[in-house]
Length: 178
Image (cartoon, rainbow, N blue to C red; front, side, top):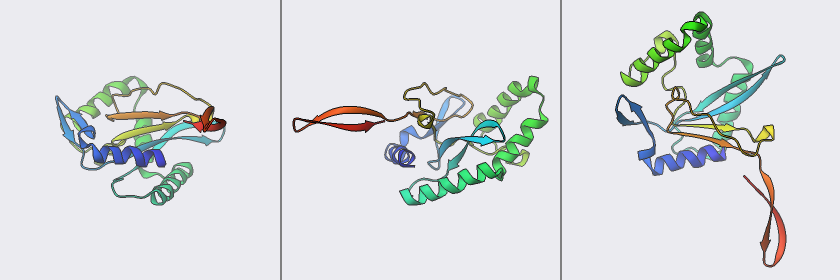
């Protein structure tokens, strides 16, 4: 929550970073939204999903923590309407046509700026920033894959903290570093 708030404040302070590429032009996003990837454990399987913290401008840390908790519970319960719509569309499409269909969808949504919500596809599903936390998996450093599909100007990963010795006033202390 804290990292999401810091990144959102940075995008509000430097709005030139909060754009989406449509065709050959950059367009300023109307809001600052942060997508948080979430690892869901369901009946012996793992599912990488996520939720969007919408319109982060002016929100405080307690509000974001409560909203994140609620959205995570909605994902775990399987009651996220946006995710259900995406899964229903994906289940109806044969695997061999999925790639071309995604390119067509990207053209309509991002090049022509047309809403496909009537077809069950949410607008700008990934928002301004995508944050992936791989620290709970014990991974300190990793490369976060870039995805042209998400159209996020910022994709970041948070690794596990590690102990590091520092010297303060000539005495050694230990601190955690992200």
